[in-house]
Image (cartoon, rainbow, N blue to C red):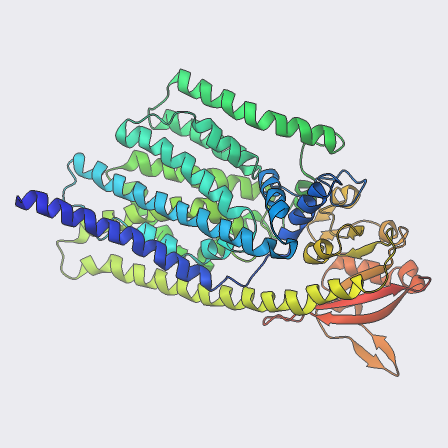
Length: 521
């Protein structure tokens, strides 16, 4: 065997080993979040369950409100529910999330390998192999990706579709291999989450930027995209009372926090601030500046969307997850660029590695904190929400008895098809379109109370006190302003009495589910 051939085989074996190692690291990462299930996932599962049980894709029977933003995930969950025990839907969707995220990791690994080969073909023979996969390593260790891969939401599937689409777009540029029918992949992403429309527009714009614009191919992709998304939108418009946007858009408009705060927290919490420095260096100094600017275009495009809609409350910054791979790739190019500039200086060339170590510590600390929080929440959902659901189920509820509460996911799924009144507005059009931001909509509490719910569940940050057999609850300790307004309303004081509470254990703060029963019931 010639030395060149032998070295080539060794190199291929090394890179394959690295790819498998990254997958193993990611699986280990996901285990820290495995027990956690996001409560909102069960909102979608209730829609899926009602669909297969003949009640249609609704949350409450007779109410045509689109309280989910993941049509394809809802359909896939419905298909799953046909074949599995309904109590195991969380496990099966976790497995789908893990598999699709492994697919995303593998595609980013392949893209890094192709970027290495592309750079060497362009004369960058000094490009270090050890640094050419740093982005994949950090992606595999990402707490946000790990958490969102197994929390039973659609984020992992959506990210895989987005990465698949852009991976094929990059092949057109790197290997002159046209990404035919790529509009179909982005269409599937668009019916998984509404942001898919934004990513498709960025992909089309990227073709012009990478000088891969071909009218026939682009027109074909646009037609494919429309052929898939149009029927879904027509169905949504006709079935959900002429609404062009999901009800969740109106409920969450303004976000749980501002978009700028959400993005800043993402970088500060994860040690990504250091990586952001590499991101800038990668854009400014790398030889493959056009490709790196393309990655930045995708990142900034998504940032604009988040700035418009605001951030959400969920652990793991799920809105950022689809762009984390592009942040890591651009960071990787920054490390390589900085190292190539400093490598001749024995002292300065270790600077990139010191910065990477600091970033790793930041990411590791955030991972420990995030894992602790979601593991606490996992226990809380079992001790609090699940126990509450089964307690309510044992109260001889009549078919028309409504339950009004904020955390409608797990409770609503267990009680299917019992009518649930979501006081946050995710599945209620009137509340969703009321003034205010998510979890703090300013609507008249009489709207809720005049519907005579059999039970109202409010959340308190402190344990209720009992004095002479009566419960004492400080209204300012209720979890949200809208709950406080309900609690203080005369109709509530007149018609509802405290029944019991359930403790949703949280290591960071108190979270008590207070159950109030209608006196006349």
